[in-house]
Length: 394
Image (cartoon, rainbow, N blue to C red):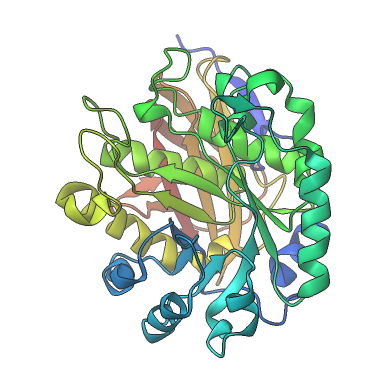
């Protein structure tokens, strides 16, 4: 006999009401509108980026559904901007003199800080010093805005966002209170952690660290900053394990359901040999990411629409099984996206709280399968780290 317990009412972050529907609607419609030369606010566009890749591969990444570059090695240079403009691939990059003055600078849609200032910084004399002071990041952010206020500024932080005990933070290990200060130096804030290939047992294989970081950035910024996050798409330095297509999909959708508004794929491989664009040489992962990007792009107008609150509730067979939900309404359909943010399978009931639809069926977007709605309830079986995307018409 299953004992069901209500875990949350619909919203992206464990039932925490981070913003009202009115605020959400305003953010959804104006997220990028304030920057004249920034990222497009077209609702059909959802940022799907790659980290620090050569412009010569831009066309190949476009075929995989990538629509944004983040970072340019020792750039931007004029040649890099020319190549990206030729490929119609917008870019987020450092703010240097070339980027400010180039006739091809219109391909630049945001500026960025140096990567992971929250981590211990290498010293010229050898070893590591403390992280960069958050006040310096805020000062640099203001200088960047003074030079150009027409584009947003991206700050990418390290895995300490989700993993307090990360040794790479050096003397600021276990000091999460630093992060709200860092966030003040950004318009868009992102972070990276790669649990599928992680080398620490407390993180390895625990995909929930990814949505945990998204939730924290939203909370630490009072939901006033645009939150993106990075996703592992290579073995990086793990010679025995690489992320599976299922893990990548779970990490991406857990992030989106938690409220991430942009995905940055990390595709570098460092061991056993270096490959900057390893995703392009991995048919299995490239096909999986291409399909995933196609699905997200098709759903971009839905993802960019306001989230709904108090529309459905989820009832799980276990209080230990965390289930997250995001609800959207678009084109006369209700979209309900569910993520199992844990490794254990779960049996759950999805309860429609209001007579919002006359439909007696919901359709799984992934495979087109119809499921019955009986007495306003959908019975749901969720695999560990499973994702189910429903559309209810009418």
